[in-house]
Every structure is written in C-alpha cells, then in structure tokens.
Amino acid sequence: MKRLTKKIATSIMALTLVIAMGTTCFGATWGSYIGGEEGTAGKVTANKASGFTIALDPVGWGEVWGAQVFLNCETNPSLKQYLTIKKNHTYTLAFDIKATNIPKYVYLKIAKGETLAYAQWVKLTGGKTTKVNVSFKAQANADSVYFGLAGDVGTRADNDAETRYAIFQKQFKKSAEDMNDTGEYHYAVATNITVSKFILIEQPKVKSAKSRKKGKVTVKLAKVPGAKKYVVKVGTKKKTTSKTSITLKAKSKKKVKVQVAVISKLTGVTSPFVKYKKKVKVK
Image 1 (cartoon, rainbow, N blue to C red):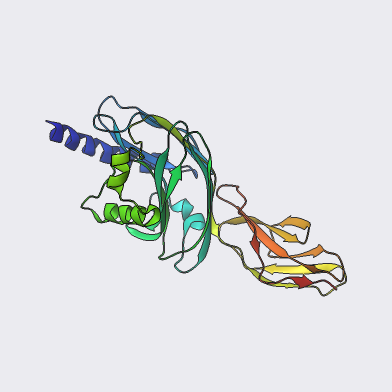
Image 2 (image 1 turned 90 degrees about the vertical axis):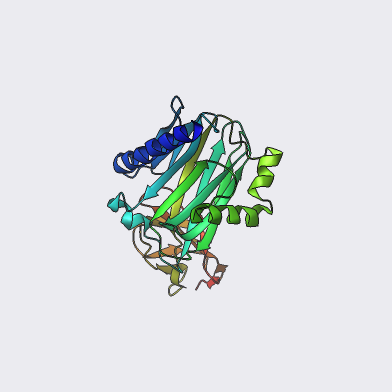
C-alpha cells in the first residue's frame, strides 16, 4: 500500500513540476516543485529574481519528501540572455541563505540537464544566515540553476543522485548515511528557507587600465552578458557606468588598485569586486 501511495505521489509531483515550470518561471521569477503525499503543506511564499522563500512542512514518509526551486532557460527562453553559461568561462555565484530553525544541507547545481557546469552543497546553521561567494570555471555549457532543498538522504540508482552524493562526500568527508546516523541532516523538521541577494554572472574583466593624463586613469572592460551596469573603482574613487570605457580621477604620482564589479540585469544585485592584475601608476 505504501508503495502504491508513493507511486501516486510521484505522478502528482511530476504533474506539479510540469505546471510549475510552465507558469511560475516566467517574469524572471523562480520555478518550483514540492513533492509529497496528500495533506502535506509546502509552498513558495516570496518570489523575485534576486531570491525566494519556501515554507516546508516536516520532511519524511507521509509528508514533504522533495523540493526544488529553479531558474531554467528551457522552460523560460527569456532567461537565455542571463543564464547562458559557457564552458571554461569564469563566473561569480553569490547569495545569502537561511533556514529558520534547524541546521540543514542544501544542494545547488548549475547544469544543462544532467551535465554539470558547477555543483556544491551548502551547510546551514539553524537561524543564521550563510553567505556564499564563489568563483568557478564552468565545466560545461549550462542554462539552469537549481536549489535542492529537501529529499531523501542516501545513495540512489539514478546518475544525478549518485553525482550529488559523491560531491557531498568529497566536500564534507562524510557519507550521506553518516549524516543520517548522527541526525545532522535534519530533513524531518519544518522550516522556512530564504535565499536573497542572488547573483550568477560572468566575472568582469579589465581589458586595460592606463593613465594617459595627469591625475586620471582610463579603464576599458570586456562586455559581460547579462550586465546592467559596471562599477569601477580606482583607488578610493568609484563610479557606476553602462559603458565599457570610463575615466576616473586619481592621485598623481601614485600607484592605485583597479577593481570592477557588475550589476546583474536579471536580479539587480551587484557582484563582488574583481581586482585588476596589477596596480596602475598615475601620471
């Protein structure tokens, strides 16, 4: 009877996934699905491009047993200008994430189907905000980002599960079964999970930074797909521009650091600054 109930629930979840992908992903918001049995509660309670909040009931048999929140170009072609990840290009991934009352692990993948460009687990401390800020070189082309927020812990037969649990073991030096035995996974507790200040964008590059005039430095940037504006910092001076070339004032006869950040057109979030490879001597 349990197997039949779970099979029915699986079918319902698949239908829910199709509906969610077709209706909630448009307008630069996050798509979602929450799988579970009849009577379970779980829903996205806040949703905008820069983040979301998902409320989950206790997770386990008879309750919510699977939850994902995602951006996917396949179901929302308008996202292609923001989420076309190219192999061997370097990207910034940054966001804040919090589970309201429990320690928890969340799986994040950037992929095209089952082909991963990048993936990692994030360990959350109950009630505290965890800040994620990573730079990665894409291992493959990709067009989607997924947060895995609930589900069974342990190895399964399908390739995607085997991959994510292998990443878990490598990252934390413990198997998924170890986490179950010690109770550290805490999937069977109700929680709200909030993601905010989300940005996934190619890292900006400084093509050149030169001082041709007294007290001024001209910085030229490579264009970043999905960038709304660029933030350029020369020494202590900072300017925001939509152009890829900008001149800033600087102290004469000094060597100054040049840094650049980018504002995402999708989320409106500003990326961390990236330093230019060398200091520039000001005329």
